Image (cartoon, rainbow, N blue to C red; front, side, top):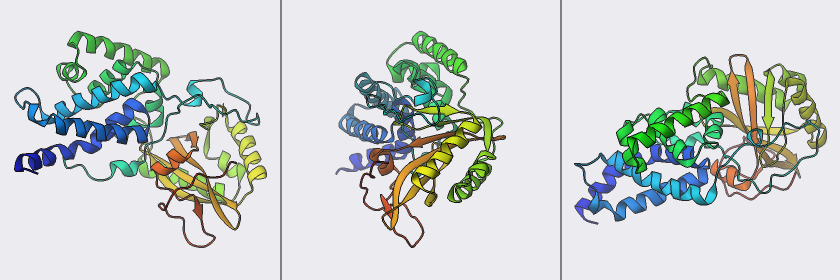
Length: 336
């Protein structure tokens, strides 16, 4: 490797984490985002001799490549909704209905963003929240790009037009439509009025203690009146504190009261991995991510699937003894 090649690598590498966050916002999948960032850097490396520093910054140039990669991917993969944005609410005791044809929004492990930020660019984790990420999935690909580039990342209209390969007029039009769509959905990328990260974690820690005690009433006391639970890849979702209690009563009755929980963080939100008692140990069952307001927990997004579990480095099984820890080879959990 020549000195020039090494210099390019050193200059480009610090932007990897923020590009990962950008690709996740565009695609809604941690796995896809990692693949697309790799593709971005491969394309940038091959085109490094054509980079013109007099025309744009290296950061803008990398975002142009990443955007092209994302837009191409979106042509084939489409959007990733959550059940609450796709079908009507169901009864909490209704039979599970698999959404076999849907590609669901996936959570993004905070650990992927915790490697430091040598470029000095702070990742806006509020714009990674599941509610905002889900709302983005209802925008067209170019509306999504315009909104993220302008409102989240702070690029100028001219810079966004350069990155998207279009005109300032087109960017402004896409941005206006995207803002209107998010306003209709009541979603904003900021955290005004929400508890601090430490307070949110404290709410979920209390929820974890009640969960480990199979204390349904204790769980209900931590919820808002209009709390929502959704469970991709199942189409089922429901709202309301009482419905939530009915469902959790069924969970403990059907799957047992003996669980072990491992705290995780995803999309700038607190959560945990739930392991249920199975064959002398504990088997990974779900990964749950919580939205917390000043009034309590307002949403629980419950995920299953080997790809989601692998993104968080979660072991498929836990021994009887010893604290639960992430890591180890992943094996898909048994059904149920």
